[in-house]
Length: 421
Ligand SMILES: Nc1nc2c(ncn2[C@@H]2O[C@H](COP(=O)(O)OP(=O)(O)OP(=O)(O)O)[C@@H](O)[C@H]2O)c(=O)[nH]1
Ligand SMILES: [Mg+2]
Image (cartoon, rainbow, N blue to C red):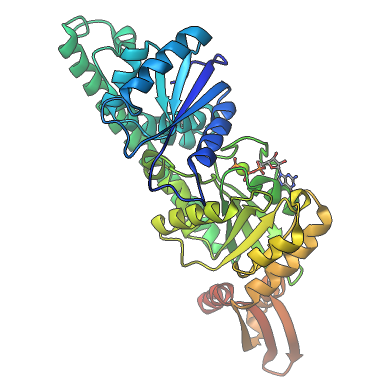
């Protein structure tokens, strides 16, 4: 949706009465500015207007619109982005008044996702979210599809054109939904295959840019793109992580969360995010050097709740320790988040710290299995050695008596294999 040129951009935000000190309109505008830069735009300036509610016609007040119009002309502004989602009519009114393109936060995030989607599934998910967003925003001024379409029915008067465009979009939406169903069935098969491997599954989640991908790369031999940009990761990457107590973890890196994450994206990415819901535990990465991290944690927790993943065992990994100014005062704050560990994903020595914290964290999910394995089923012993800690192994005339410390769910999976032998 955004033209690819580095457009000179003006950001617009509102200071509303319900704003809290924890997350002010300035914080939000700063985040919007980072998003704009991620999309390749040049942020020229930002304006904030204090209001009781967004203006129903034009988001900011009518006087402000005139001021902005002047600024647009004087300074050669090429694009305006608002910090809140605009209604289709607000967007249309602003555009026709100011005579330049107006995008809202949602449109911008969708655009970044579109730029970054690599796999076929992510591309389908983003396109679906974009069309969902676009459909109510189609106006007579919108000519994109008519240029593409041509032929019968596309040369009628404006209204007819609009109806044709809407129908075409609805058809495309239903095609995309069908295609997505197929890729999701494929994902389901992959997951079932993975479920057959007796490994613990963990999902790395957290606010965008917290360092999730850097962490998975540091912990495993993954080569996930990690960069100082928002939404660097859209597709889940799963890697094997072996812990020192022999717990074998399948770790999945996921898409980052953000304030006001467009609902269209949550809906269309639900299948990908379901990876999160199916995990045994969540590794919640937080940028400890960001003074606003408590709000970012709240946002992440709220989204987890929406995904019904908020009851999974969770360990907080406070990252970017090297950037923290005052570690003593930070530690006081961190006491509210249990269990937690403070690390820098860029420091290999800290990975040991994290591994040890993980062992303690996962130990709560462990159980002890006492069992006599007949000699005919000795292959099972290998599984216990691979995925758990065999504490005792005594050979008798009936077989081998073993005592194993193992993650409870993995233990029952191996027992199920044993019973099926
Ligand atoms: N100083 C410092 N920078 C870090 C650390 N960990 C990650 N970063 C940087 O933070 C930026 C974001 O890292 P990513 O790993 O891409 O973050 P992410 O959480 O995967 O982000 P998204 O995929 O966009 O949600 C990159 O520039 C990293 O180099 C750290 O411990 N210290
Ligand atoms: Mg990432």
